[in-house]
Image (cartoon, rainbow, N blue to C red):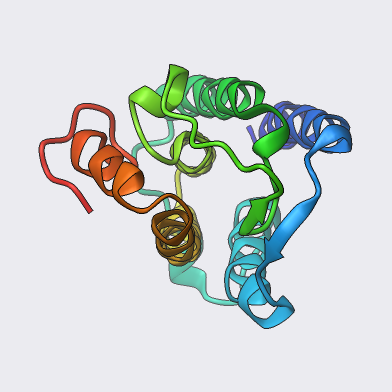
Length: 193
């Protein structure tokens, strides 16, 4: 299974990254950009999470222990969840158009997008990424996957909070009303952040 995991998930993630790089070419110019230090607060933990999902062995034996019995169902459920999460994030990226950025920014002539996937959650790219990371972790079927999900979730949560603050400053009551109406990450969730 490790070889199949490596090739299938490498292909999925590489395809997603290549699309992301290609799609970034036409983003609007930045009017406001987060600092390098702020960026590192979420980029470094995300890289650690990716490394945990990618490497064959970790120095802490417990992290390599299986969670579920050694069957194929965690692998294929994980592959499906990873694919669906990536597709959801791509849908959001396409829908966001030129307002997208890899880092927290306010674009010139920034628009508040609240349709498509943004009518389901305020941060659908993060929702998709978290689902894809959870899927990759389920397919790994070990405790390091759980650790990777926790680290990635914390990193994206920090980035989300900064974006929320900037969008509230940029759009004022329009964004506050949007946040009251639409959950941050989980579609149809009753509680709001």
